[in-house]
Length: 465
Image 1: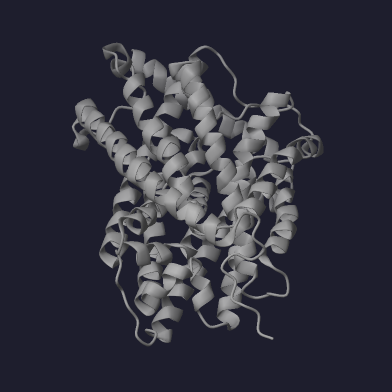
Image 2 (image 1 turned 60 degrees about the horizontal axis):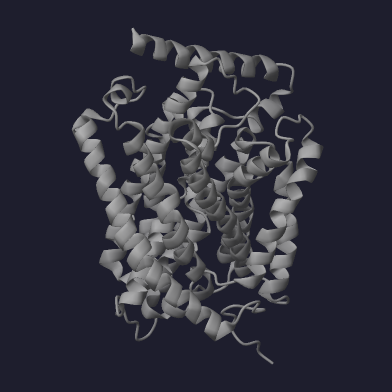
């Protein structure tokens, strides 16, 4: 009877929300309905895939030069699988939390559930505080990275301004994301974003193969432990884009259908990242060690300029993806989350953009900053904390008995899932946070020593007289 009641709560409430959503949209134009307000399984898939492969696509060849081809491919497959598993865990915990609350007649139709609230409801305030710290800090620096990437990319089609000046300009442009209310409203943006990165990935692949190997090309990676683990943590960062999983799920009309969406999105992303990173590394080899942005090595033509422009637009979209959860947290903190006025919410959100802008100007190290964020923040935010939270939430026999979502049978049920979770925690803590943190921090400090903070033009070639 308990399981029947749980199913009734989930299906009844979610179907009700879907029906109300459809009724409310019937008064709007079909144009707005089609492009602006999404909540389907396809919308969630586009959001996950688009958010996962952004500017990091341009730094993966750099990681291959640090790791070597074989390790680069294996780490992509391995972390893609680990990321899909922990995204699944987050979705399970979200459904568990939401179901328990809806049994208590809590109405979420005017409230966006976030990861720290899931941890609070299931495990208490200490888990909430830890989750809030890591999640917000990661999303903050994730937004910083998108802003740095904008300046890095635009420089390759217009070098009349230095990268720092471009950062000022794109900071102002990205601030317009304050007007996008929620993940419901990223329907057309998610679709376009994925098309843009798909074009760029295949451009990198085909252009590198046509270009061929440079004279005297060397593929000596891995050469040092520091470079090896720096490259590995960049890939850890690549497949750790599910810090916004809860917000994407909450934007769905039927969130319980999310379970395999991230895995399917990851499989598609691998069809972009593996060929492009392999082809660029094959063509340019060790030269990538000093060129963290793959676009910098390809000859300028219309195809490359198109890739640059498309990536700029996509980075604007991904900036919004990373920043929107921060906007929600800030809204709740200052007490305007339930305000229906888009303009009032947009004005209230603007202070969130200012520290992002400032940090992008201080640390413009495109490439190395990915690994640092990956090891110190992504490792806990989307790998270690979800795995531990799942283990603790279902540690009691009664919790396992009444669980809304049970572990997949092919993994061995609860025992199998606990074994996988334990492995994820140990591996990511030792290899990702431990060795990765050591290596990425050393590399990051070297960038500061070589270029300095607030550097005007990171890795810019000297101007010709």
